Image (cartoon, one colour):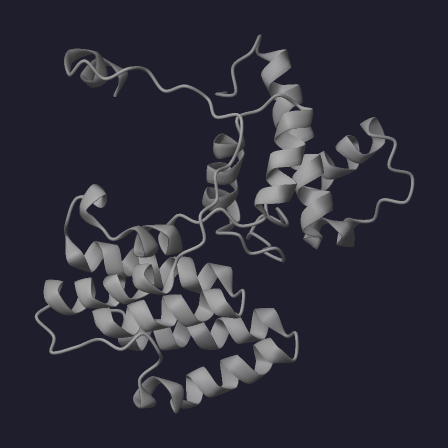
Length: 232
């Protein structure tokens, strides 16, 4: 990629010192809805959920479960709903928008990413709001603070968090990695010891502030071990 950039005269990437967050405006959101309609030759695409989606049993169950704090069970309903509507661009947009509003970040990212795939257009041509749904900067304050503490690029930490957990705070992988930055229990216990976290418990890994602090420390430690490289 860098070779192509050199051939094109593109300056090298410079690590960012801060995450620049811009909240979407109503115009941004409406423009994104209009883009979906135009791109997929639809008469119109409302921003809010269609009656069909809003009344679907999978959505209603998932929504109620999410409101009760049963996020894992709610996500299972949302995943099943996604399978039914994954080829419906209007539904993907509406669901991505709605899930963001209730902080169901993983389903929102999955729906927005699917919408971009369906559009089959270069990413720079995708409306800003849809790109923000697919590649968000959630937990920005925590990521910013921890990245500065350990002299890491906050965009790198944010992208790694998206890759590892799609911003699902209580994510648990098949091999047992947990939380936003997917720390293995043994790794987390070692980090907790090195950080002198006397009261640390395994369940703390679902807490965003704890997981991000420990995850960035681990990345910084690996970087220092590799003489400045964050790539293994």
